[in-house]
Length: 317
Image (cartoon, rainbow, N blue to C red):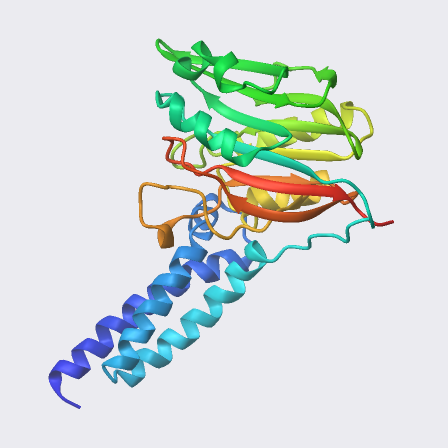
């Protein structure tokens, strides 16, 4: 083996082994903050490993390609549950409810792009988080066709006021209380063709090291308490959870709240990077008495998050 090939094999092998660390973190089940932050990036790491492995095969770097194959397997096992959660079995003939959920980004002023995205989705229910001052000033225009609304707001500093909003074509039977529990979430009971649904517009804080390490955990505990205090209806919790569904926070939501995530492919953030680098932190969780029909991304809104459009119906009993 030439010196060039030896060096290339070593460097490529080390890079591929490093990518596998993201998959090992996701599969480990360890909830420590150092491990959890790595687990968020298993999906883009898989795509990077697959591309690097293909290049190694093309260059006939067989040892590195072997490491790459092993890395791809580990990362695929880690990412697959994000992409293929159970969808449930739809009840025959039941109506379908379409939901649009988006983080609009508090400093986003492109209200026209937001409106185009919402209009193109033609959803029945809107879940919006980080609604900043610009769209708030034109809310009737932005939410034309959605007369039933409930919102909560958070102010973090001058010029930084964000709202979470649930808006609907269908009547809102009840606004769910906003509690002083550190969670930014609007809640409403929406009367739909498949019956009342408890809808939560959720925005969790960023994970450690970007925010304090217990922030997301305590906020999910608060969301769990709000769900328990809400009427006993099917539940949809959507918004920016700042976590993939298979990391610590996603597992906490599924275990403590008995909610099921929508598939996480394609990713939603950061939409200003190439699509292969996106991860799904904008989640749509449902209770088991609802079945998921479809999940896709909406048109860009000017935010660094892509909207998510999901369709639901009653689950077969």
